[in-house]
Length: 259
Image (cartoon, rainbow, N blue to C red; front, top):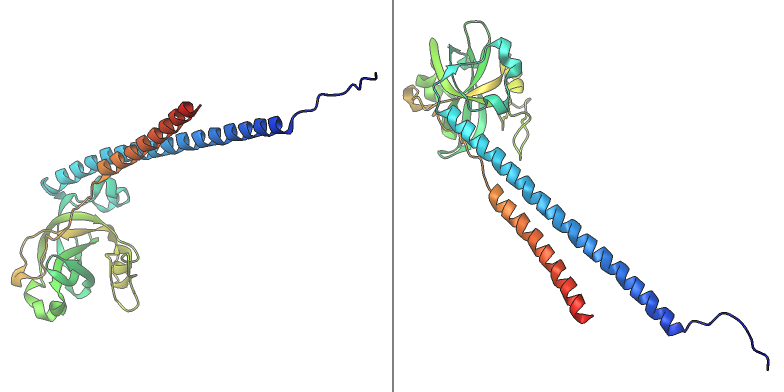
């Protein structure tokens, strides 16, 4: 009897099952890796929010200290290039000079007193430099300087207030229209250029609540509000990371129980 030699033939069903198991292991590995990476990303976002919380608390503490400190002289021209938001915004300062009332600019404002305008007026100092001063708020029906002549101060005046950084181009919703003289933000460079004010500081001053003759403009309306929801965000991100890890553990345990 003749015996035919050759390779043992694999059973098609066994081959299919082995391929299916390999495919399943690959999918499981991808599933596990994706969940681990997702949990890591969520935890990283939580850690970032914790860092932001520390930064925000430090910012609030620094600003609170500045607004309650005794006023200091405004930065001199030689220091203008060093003035920045981190170190100087909301610092209480004082300046003495002459208000250029004929060069005031009205900037649209929405305040606790209702809609109206900020009155931005250059203050000329003894050294010839100028600082744009937000003297305060006037309602829409008092935008005309002739309707508030008592508040158009002449002679040397002392202004005390908070240093603020320029607000270039416009608000979130509307851009400044320089040509039409319509202003929606306190853009120091654009306003001083439009009014022909030379040697102007790159920042402006929000005047304090010291009353002006006639009651207008109304100063001291600076809103200092730093939303601090970072702790809630951190808890949310960490919670989501924990949920993803719990899902992974649940899936792996269920797989072992089924095996």
